[in-house]
Length: 93
Image (cartoon, rainbow, N blue to C red):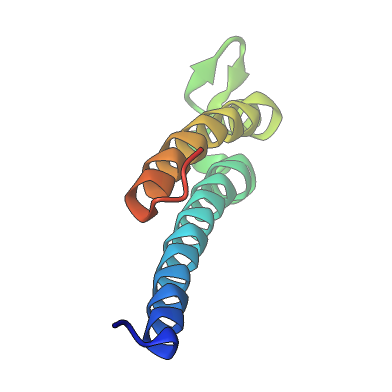
């Protein structure tokens, strides 16, 4: 017979592992988006000024459109990764 406390402890450990993995994915996604929007669009813009994309330098392009495209890609990657994580922890729909 399984002790109720041990089952609760196992559920809590599984829940903590799930949320730890979820937060890690979120932080990595935010770091990538920050680097592309703030890093490439503002901080590294002078270094990217010689590379032209659509009539504008690459730093300006990242500040205006590139960070939006990166954000959209990150949304799909996050959804794909979370579906995989949900299946791994048995909480998928």
